[in-house]
Length: 379
Image 1: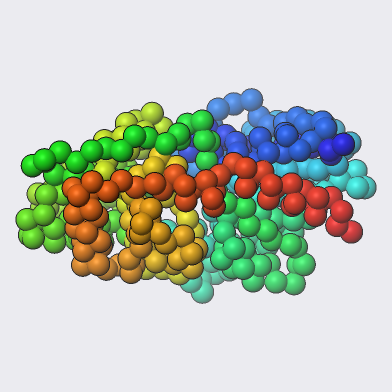
Image 2 (image 1 turned 90 degrees about the horizontal axis):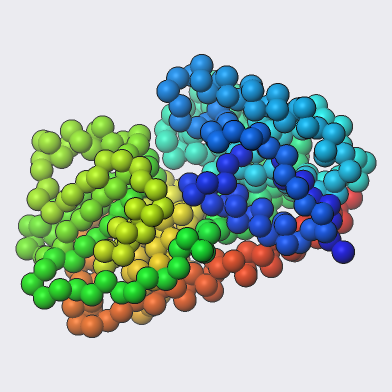
């Protein structure tokens, strides 16, 4: 007999946040009684989302919490309240809601706020007053949880240090993708005399290391290697990259400057021979396995990404996951040239096997079962 579970918050489960969908499905399967308490609108509903103005973000944020507050009585009989990403504001609201004496709170700190704002995006300088305020806000919010989830063991250790003194367990659960949307693809066969297609997509944040990708493309063009790069995405560093490409054009790069839906990404992956991960030089960049790597592995495409503590154990050149030093365009160019030779020689990647072994739905469901038992039996 499973617990009574309520999933609570102004979260979204659309394709950009498949983790919420994946973890909620696991909890539904583990629970005897399951329901969701969330606003009925479609916008993400949090201060960290992208809207046209600060006012629109604030308005949506306040309205969502008002809607959640009106449904607070639905939480009181639950054994478990799960707060998906982004949990921070919803956990603060939970401080004002009376729960049952035995109700436990499980929260997801995916895209951990402090490192995302300070390290990934460089929005707040280290040591500044605003940075210290953000760290305090994160601690205050997550202190409401009985157990906190994050995506890798390395991130778990980092967050555990951030929460030092609060005695809140932090447990790692892989990112999780909707496997119905990401089945394996047939291999894109290299055409004789035609360039191989290398794909990168993302939100162009510093963690991605897009400048390294561009310089690797430039090096391969100079070498005369028949490889073309397709970039898809937009974001924080896009403006700077536009200026760099205008000053120093790269002949083998095509950039679709927009954020596209899952169907369009799948079409791009189907046409790609190789998919790129991340190449940023920060510590955080080595501690994560981003969505794009999960999706490419699940799609059965060769992947090149950076070495890092979260990916080193996954290295498998034979099956198609290749790693290189971060921020090193020469090493990236060498690895891509080597993969091109293997593909032209008839080799085919089997990276779906890597995905199933480490990140598949079955392993995530088993992990969530262990965590739910742990939090429910905690004192």
